[in-house]
Amino acid sequence: MTPAGIPPADDQPPLDRPGTRTTAPSPPTPRGFVVTVPITAPAPVARLRTKDAFALPEAPDDHLVIRSIQTHPTSGTRLIINAHGKGAPLTMHPEEPVLPIRMLRTFELTCALCPGRARRVLDLVLHGTPHAWVCQACS
Image 1 (spheres, rainbow, N blue to C red):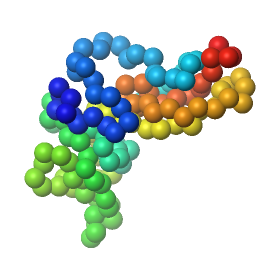
Image 2: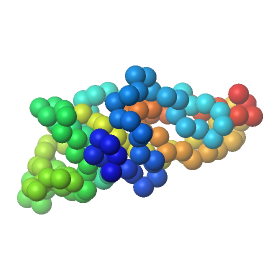
Image 3: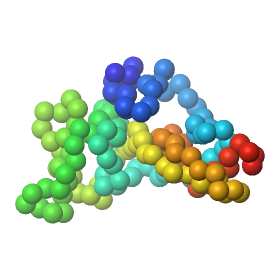
Image 4: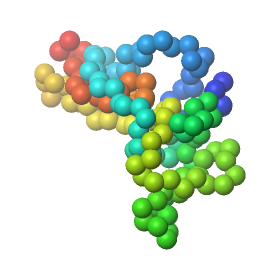
């Protein structure tokens, strides 16, 4: 568990001190740099995946980590979200807004200037969505 109570993701080390960053650090890259576009908050719950962390707008300090997410069996327009620490699952509309806390995604990056390729894990909340990558040889 991290100090904020969010379990660390399998491929991401835990944060040392939550809430101490005032600006997002440069995304980790395989030598070079990534240009990213920030995600908007709140985001629709349908953008979340297993192991993502989020908070409901009415309880922004109550961070929830998704254990599983599935379509409701009788109402195809709803999602059932099982979160760590919640006894009962949450039933939500896919477009319902939530406050994303952590959204780790793996990206295959291709250098904008050469055919170089790299695979990186970025936190969409912290780093944003990658728009372009330039490898070390080209930078």
